Amino acid sequence: MIFEFKQRHSSLTPDEITQKTYKCDLWRGGFEGVLSSGAQTFCLFIAIRYFDAGQLTKSLIAAAPFIGMFLSMFLLHYASATNWGKSTWGALPSIATGACLLISAWTTSAYLFAFFVIAAYVCRGTLFPFITDIYGDNYPLRRRATFFSKSLLLSVGVAALSGFIGSSILQKNIEYYPLIFTFLSFCAFSKAVAIYCIPSKKVDKSPHGNPFGNMKYAWLDRSFGYVLLTWFIMGFANLWTLPLRVDYITSPRWGIEGSAIFVAMIITVIPETVRMLLIPFWARLFDKMNFVILRMILNMFFASGVLMFFVSSNTWVIGVGSILIGVAFAGGSIAWNLWVTRYAPPGKVGAYMSVHVSLTGIRGTFGPLIGYWAVGLMGAQNIGILSFAMMLIATLMLIPEIKHGKGGTA
Image 1 (cartoon, helix red, strand yellow):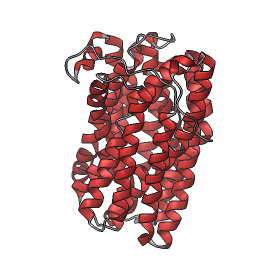
Image 2 (cartoon, rainbow, N blue to C red):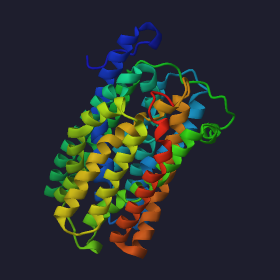
Image 3 (tube, rainbow, N blue to C red):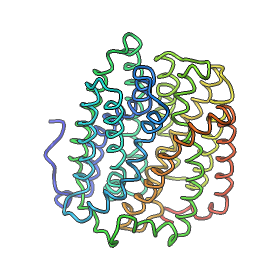
């Protein structure tokens, strides 16, 4: 059987825990890759091309995963009041994601499609604190990125492949989109099974009386809080361009009007293929290198990629920008998922991660809304230039923090 019956964390040796976690996480990563391609390409493409969605609808679809990240703080707080394991709570949002995607696949209403797609990806975004907490418990410190990178590698490879196959189907006939979303639903249910089978401890009890209690770590731990501030500036500059990338090469407004294949290649296939090739390289660096210096390097790859994506309507220039974004995401996805394990004291990984994820959720929720508003005022090229400047400032702000990025735990 692919998935064995769930075993208690305490009944396994440390090596057995690591190996079982690794095996189950590979399956999780594969199914997550398909869901990732749905979020990056298919949801917005169908909303724009099939349902002719308005600006608010497009913004909310793009913001959905980040709304879920913000709400993860609430889920973690109330989950801590139960005696359930971290993997159980990590699996439940994926079940909800699968149900919502299945409904969205077969509804003919633009409003219902948007509602259930948004609900699906909101649920998908709530599970990150549980997964990162499991990594902190189950993987050894100095090999954490190495183990995680394997499932991430599989995830981005599957995302690139499924993005290409799905876009080819839509290129042939856009009316086939219900089949794609039904398959996305199947992958969400399968991902839930994979997460549930990971051995895990019970969710740590929260010492706070409300869901926002973990936010105190952002100012009690000054180094952690300062890195969060720089990450917020950098992340906002990146995230408010995410839906604009699809809109920029899809909408007639900007004169490119790319086909389904072109959109999938630029948004998913090219950057995900680059990510797949470079994830092992960045994983080794994360395990060995000063984290803050690594973060600064990644910031500049992001900045250069975003600038090149929007400064020209030339497809080759956009393609180079897409490659640089893929390079940045290869290391950025590892850093985003694991960096709190360098800062959080024992037993606080989930709490620290909930703060990081929730702040990502805030900037990811409002970023697309502000991005669509701002692009109407200043145009796509100026958005790219402004984003580059913000990322550069965030990178320079990290210079005083370099001395805190050397150790395994700050």
